[in-house]
Amino acid sequence: IPNQSAGITIPPHSVFACVEGGTDSAVAEAIYASKSAGCGYTTTTEYGTPITVDVADGGTGYLTHVTFYRPQAKDIQISVAVSNANYSGTDIVSDVKTAVISFMSHKGVGSTTTPLEIASHIALTCNGAVAVGINITVDGVSAQEIAVLPYQTMSVTDEDVIVEVK
Image 1 (cartoon, rainbow, N blue to C red):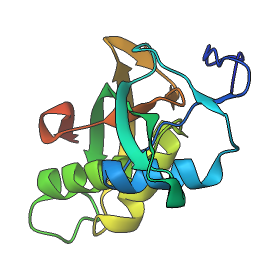
Image 2 (cartoon, rainbow, N blue to C red):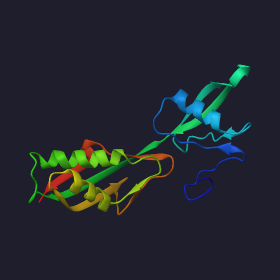
Image 3 (cartoon, helix red, strand yellow):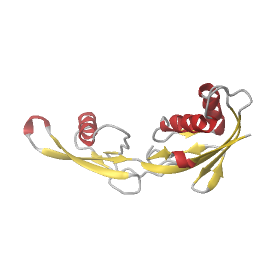
């Protein structure tokens, strides 16, 4: 979203693409094939990690530089208080951590999530475990909603998820 709340400034007749997944060459070729002739690329380090790939220009044999971005990881910490009153698995802490990390790994560039969504995923996937409290911390500050910009992804590791059984 150029020049809007995300703050991405795109020069006239240019494109900004932040892409998660795919090989660098496949992404560059797809961007080149779908942009208009003469279109430029946003080139800055503010919006993720810039990647530049040379793509062959059809039958001419000329190489064209294509620039796109890989997203910045935004570190998220999640504390979950969980009730095991109806839990039927064997390791509630491991099950909840796995559920949270799995859920968050499907959140892509520019996505949002809330504690309610995380709690719902735990309820659906953790053998009767029920989240009774969730605290999300982003960059050291508690948050009611996680929102990442169009050039960021959420990064949650096993060490970022703390589970307390109530």
